[in-house]
Image (cartoon, rainbow, N blue to C red; front, side):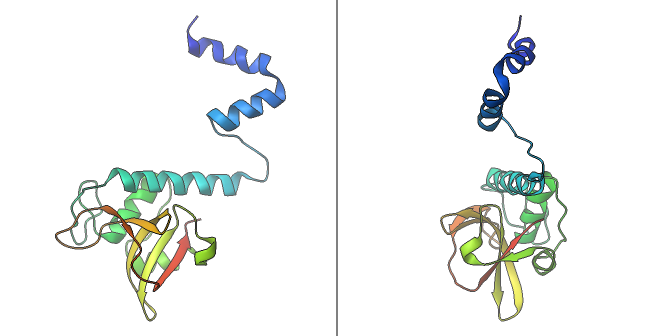
Length: 157
């Protein structure tokens, strides 16, 4: 009997508490009423992983992947691969997100750089004050510390 064939019998014998433990550790857990938050966390985590996987890809103005990106092209591509559609530009992406404060930001949230009321750059928050982004011509997708306080945060819903 292969490991795959044994899985159903493991679940049958495990009992409810053990099954929940197994699901929480080894897979996804479905809890009524919590699906939207769990789904959002999964999508954000996946988008962050996609962005990180593009480390070293060259910047190209107007590019949306899969090998070259501009800033909003990277966020659009990453979230598309995670199952969510975003508009094309950083400003339009800002307008489509749920705005959150810096104290409530989470990994996978979008980080919008602004001058006054104008959004000019976007990246994906990686935690610990860092973002994955595609900075500018001559550079590549990279993880970088946020260099200014002129940022807003948006959560993709």
